[in-house]
Image 1 (cartoon, rainbow, N blue to C red):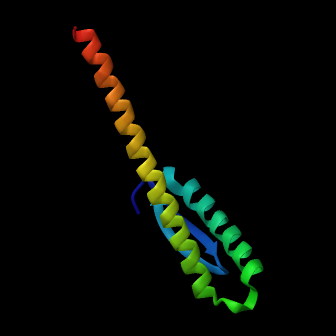
Image 2: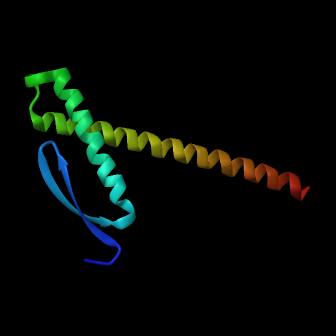
Image 3: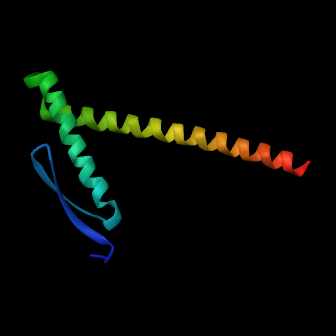
Length: 95
């Protein structure tokens, strides 16, 4: 294992999943596991026995991916706005 990598055994949905991750990323993996378990518990309370564990995990994965895609779209939009404003400022300074 590389020096900047660490082992992280994360318990998600009752299963321990081993990861080898960058040392700096380990806290994010641990926080993600906590949030996933919280969301799974929330969905389990909401839907009870009517939804299988696989359906609940899939629901969490889809919701997380939608959140990530929306965050990335917002990041791109903000980046474009910043670039536009910088270009406007540069245009004013060039005059």
